[in-house]
Length: 623
Image (cartoon, rainbow, N blue to C red; front, side, top):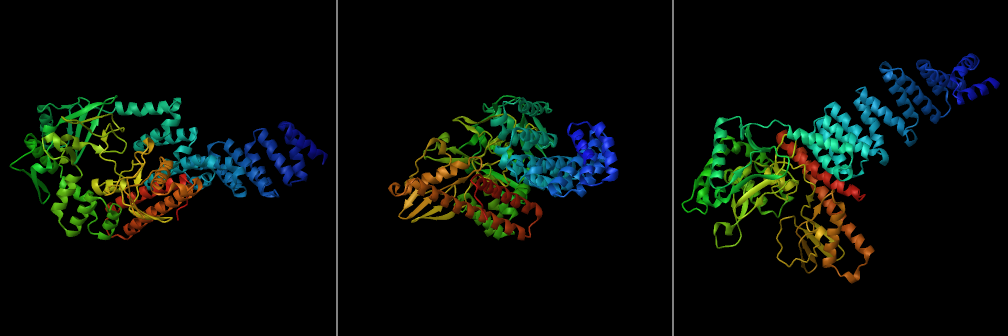
């Protein structure tokens, strides 16, 4: 007992060289837990890491409690780590044993070390398993999310990567600085430019003043600016296509328009886009009205995969005839008829009418959607092509610009501006009495310039434009019915026109969120409600404004109002999430090609994620 007490004192004072021979002497007579543990500690202290690891593991096997075992296996793992690369697997195995005996919060640092070590040893499934419990603790959730993301990237699992990024996007406000930095570095190194730009924007409000953030932001800008700038204005894999575009540019300049020297028009493999190489916002293209073909000036038909346009005898904009001819020729050279029939859901989903109708139900008050749906159900394919193809490209001009007496708008095309692709959050077109211009800077590493077509949510973007917009940060509620107190509410969707006086009390910060409201006896019509996880408080404020507009304020106090808002909100979210689950179920049963169903599944995932992220902001559980 005297020798054991002396050994403990030497270890406590970190006099390991003196402790080691005494420990060896004692262990020959007593190979129990305490002596074996002290021997391992002494060996660790003098750098005998291999022997220390062996004895610490022996002590762990002899330990009476789980907490003791966890500490000893952890220390054994640290000894293996000190031995170098050849022993990292043994270290990981020891760490796993430590976590087996203490999987909780007290051993959280061990879990972090083990997860990182598993990742470095290419044991990605183990890293995923270890990171899963980190996510359960709020202080370590961001770290767990990033480790999980890195593992999916390392495995080449693109589907899981995208799903994980949606989760991270929704939790980005809770990311501490270090994990925000780690995430951005991970995305940059993996060349995930779109997500890198997205997260850079989300983190900018909190970290833009930090040197590391400014460095990463500078790398992105430099990458855009140093992207190879083609010498020619027109970049195309077809000389014929390049010549058509050249003539379109000539028409623009002929009528006083302009095309910036920083702009490049790209047409490759049937895809049209616009790139630019300017550092500051500037007018990239300015197209006069004389080059804007009006749809009412032409007759259109489809012959096989060829689009044909014929000018009418009386024209509102006769100077645009050549532009229209060139654009149709360009569409045909780029095989846009075939391409549109593959992209437009009214064609691609036409063999699964149940799924198509269900998607359209989400926008049942949208006139354009209803027209396209009816044409598809009736099999009027040529008419559907002309209506949907030009419907995705047309722009509404004020009638007065063409000296028409009647008020309102007239639909036309946009010449080369048709090349700009859509991105939510990009700048819109700028319309003047003389024409349309676009001012912007490149939006990604490929130097592409985007514009914001319309304030559409992902569902309407898919139905009208044929692609899933993953950059949208809001979702319009589907048409639904809400019962509250003695009132019935009908949410029509974002395009309904009500025939009663609007009773909304608009305020500046709610202007984009408040609906129009119409009251008929005990029924209340609401034209739109937006679900946006980016601004989770605003839907509740919009609902509150609606309720205060139609209810007797003298009969409700703050507590009652808060309960009514939450009841309304839950009904709205429940019906919306149920709708997307029903769409998802129909897609799962569909016999359509995977490439078609993949778009529907992505749309469902994006929409459900937005609803669930919003719900999580308010701690709402949706079953």
